[in-house]
Image (cartoon, rainbow, N blue to C red; front, top):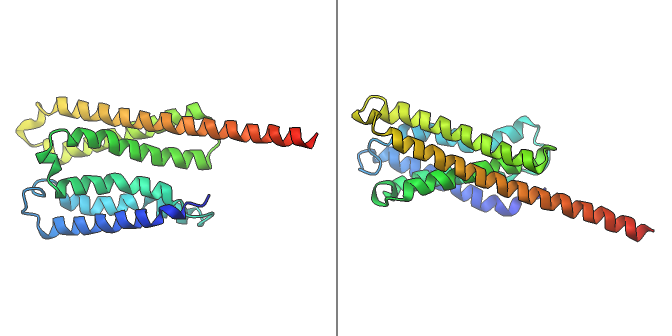
Length: 204
C-alpha cells in the first residue's frame, strides 16, 4: 500500500522531536524540563520512534514503507516533549489527561493499522488487539513513571489516584482506536465483497 503522502509529516515530527530533545538536554535547568527525566526520554524516545523502521528492515524491506503507521507512532512522543517544552503539563490543567487519552489512541491506531494490513484478524479481534496493546503500553508507561518519579518521594501514596486515572484514560484511548480500526476493517471487507458480487454479476 502506497503511503508516501505521509512521509513529509513523519519526517518533520522526527526532526522536531530530535530538536526538542536536544533543547531539553542543553537547558536541563529550565523549570519545564527540570525533574522530567528528559535524559531518559532522550534515549528512549528515539529508539521508540525508530520501531517501524527497524521492523520493516528486519522483514527485508518488503513492500512500500508504511509512513502512515510511522507517523502515528511518532506523534505521541512528539506531543509529549512539545508539551513539556511549551510548559503545558504544568500550565494547563487538562493537558496531561488529554495526552493520556489522545496519545494512546494514536499508538493503538498505529498498532491497529499494522495488524489490519499484515494479519487476517477479523474486525472484532482487531478491536480487542488494539485495546490490549494500548492497555499494556499504558501500564508499562505508568510503571516507568512510578519507578522514575514517584518511588522515592512523599507522593508515593497520594499519587495512586492520578495513576489509576491515567491508566483508565489510556485504556479508553486504546479502545476508541480499536473500535475505529474495526469499523474501517469491516467497511473494507464489505466493499471488497460488494466488488466481488458486482464482478460476478457483470460476468453473467
